[in-house]
Length: 251
Image (cartoon, rainbow, N blue to C red; front, side):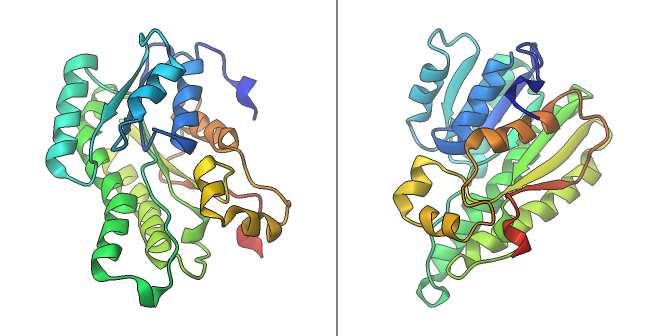
């Protein structure tokens, strides 16, 4: 499945909201939805999300950026109200917001743990909960949660992240059960992805050295799977999390 597997109008008339979209994987997923005809709402706590939206769609006719703290109930509710007022409903939600900050367990405080669980897991719950009525109203809603291969094979120094992403996989099943048949909820578990953030944190090179394929994914590799799960072509996959990691959990 490549980027040309979908027509440029595959998502025409559909509205997609992507969280954690100021940069990296979220930005690329947003661009791919835009390129395939969707109206796109990029959401991030990072104010650069508005410039990202402008870069994707210079006319700002189909792609906009919204600033929100998705770990806070009131902020999520305000986002939902603004989106519903402007767009009426959304058809697709991609929960991509997250953070990866490796530290040894002995160096992680309780507040550090809470913060990482909130960003990587709580955001998925609050955002899906807030938009589930909007998604259900279309009778063809789609939710795609970005988990991680680390949920299956935790590494040293990433305990809160791995635990949170395992929770994302569980939440995917819970929401899939509760929102059926009007909304299909699935997930994607990537392995290492070559993004600017990953490169700057210094761990990507080591991950590539240990990878069976000898290279990392690019964001489009993950985005293609997200597009399928969110598309009208997906009519029967529900509650599943697809591992797209090039085989890292095999070794």
